[in-house]
Image (cartoon, rainbow, N blue to C red):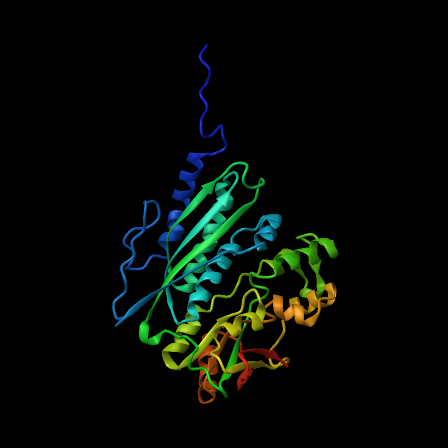
Length: 345
């Protein structure tokens, strides 16, 4: 009797499942398409026509992941919000130079493909793209047996945006007296989760479904999986009306580690503690984990997810524009003469 031949599925890779996933996610992606998408999900490459109206267009690219926040999503079996996080981490980065996101691609890697889980993740990615106003035009799903533990996956995202060369924001015009505006974050966003997981699940021995009264009576996973805020539409509206000198996406490294990246030599950013609302989650982490204040500011956004630097004469108008766009905005500091850096007082 002839022995049955070994198949790819026997080795742990289900081609049919991958094909089902592609069919399942096409409608999500198609909802994000604009008139410039020439070819989308399912082909070997995706085409995108450069928009008209730019004198000297500059393409701006970015890539990022979600980090160990994915562990919380996998523990809770809640997978759609990390897709929004993935988009946010990429588009908020390229936004800092004034770039409008055009299109997005994702990379989903796992040991054994769960079509339902992957579809939830990609549905979240599509939602993030809708919020950011960009098109989800492609991606890659990699099923790699023995590479990832069962039930785990990893994500990476890639975005391309556009800005006119004359409108490219470099931070080089920032000067003494300029004002620093802070836009409120939605929570932890997507950084510091190795510390967060250690505190919640090891030190405090909480479960993802436990209710935490100090955090508004929400369940642990609801607080920890709050998606990263996407600032694209608010900021693009702002830079259309006000001269913005510099911007920073407050991610790993906190306000000090990110704001310094846009400062020219000869000036420093002075941040005034108490000038904005520190969200309850950060107070909870600091108190329960006995985390030093310096470590908190170096690890978390502390309630400020994005920073904008404008001239003092533009402060009031900039805040009005951002507030009309739905942002909570605070004047969190000023630019002073001194050695390049960030000082928190």
